[in-house]
Length: 257
Figure 1: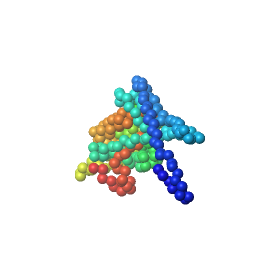
Figure 2: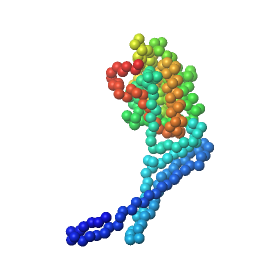
Figure 3: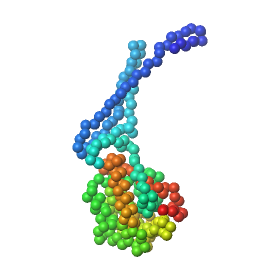
């Protein structure tokens, strides 16, 4: 490249050079184990005429990669700084999706809401999760008494029993949650109602439970079960819940058909 100065003198500049570097990272599989691959590196560059050696150092832990062999019976890697989202199919289970959305909007804790930056956190301990479910819905202490107008009598608790935000982690019974039920309308849509068999909620409760159709309850739970190994959620990993009703106005009537 040639550059002409103000004095019409020609100065010969060296041609630019390009240097590249490739780093390869690998993880030796450990059964039931996990490791964090850190992408920090430093390198030095110099030329024969340089008086100072350039030593750039790059570091950004947002791009750290976690590899594990703890979920799904296989090995995989994820970016742990990224918070994934469980997307529910409101066409397959409109009643449960709408019920979760109302709780995410109305409860002071907004469990699972990306809008309020309140993710749920996975609970890996199956024994504790079962105990949560029992206290919320199954055992005598739960005092589960579904409304006679409910379109289904399956007890669905939210936040999920397999989350650290489950009411069962701190409460002795699901009767202290917000109580709702769903029933199908003549046009095929579903209505979500407060259950007047229980006290009117203050919305400072930490959980809710609702009487819903068994199939919708099972399908929603199955979605969470598939999501966990696909996204490689480990114990205490955060995640958001997206119901498909996020565009609704809580003060208006939402058709949840």
